Length: 126
Length: 126
DNA sequence: TTTGTTAATGCAACAAGGTTGCGTTATATT
DNA sequence: AATATAACGCAACCTTGTTGCATTAACAAA
Ligand SMILES: [Mn+2]
Ligand SMILES: [Mn+2]
Ligand SMILES: [Zn+2]
Ligand SMILES: [Zn+2]
Image 1 (cartoon, rainbow over the protein chains, first blue to last red):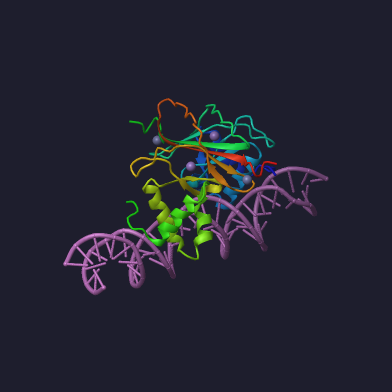
Image 2: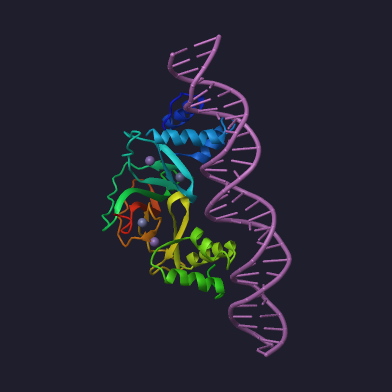
């Protein structure tokens, strides 16, 4: 897998993530770009960018899928593991550059983990 | 809100959770009990049991909703916060009695958090 | 035990996020 | 320019979960 051809959709989506520091949901991208590109295309490009190690994905509130830029990941390995913060007021999500110590669990092999913290962001935190 | 009447559906669902130590997904409950109770009923009873502090819910793989028994929670406060482990092989999910230190994040008010760890459970860990 | 109130249920229709199959288009290679 | 095929658009579909409303049943009062 992986992105092979530099199409309009790939270009536009990559630009979305390069000009923003926060995560973006697939839903938001479809709302924003759905007139220009078919939603199927958007889902498929996101999928491939993730396979390529360009983006990483995770599930936010209500199980919605969010994407954000990766730092130092490759197609072979997603090593950029970190928690995410979602504001319950404005809905914004961002990646936290924080190291979370994953607890050792007896008799189990941990392969991945997903840590979603929810609350009020700096803008909504009165 | 909260459960008021002890109906058949409430009884059966409570029994499901009392005879099992692991978490159960709404989907699994509907597959298992869907002939006896309407899925709407199952969703609504789970909802109420959660409001009552009897069950807690969280999202597992693929955004599916899972439920498990609460320990020492009330209708007013869900204090039973802990990570969950989902086996990527058999799909089983359980509650981890482990304290996770939620990192302090500047300028943000943390209201809740969700920690899902994925890997191989003791049965599937060859 | 009968009656009355209304919470809980079943059903059908719907919502929303995401996926699939397939014919068409456009990118990159020769 | 011709070719191969990755990527695209479209429509139809799938899944989990929700909603409105008429009907049923839990429970308390009479
Ligand atoms: Mn991230
Ligand atoms: Mn739990
Ligand atoms: Zn906010
Ligand atoms: Zn397992």
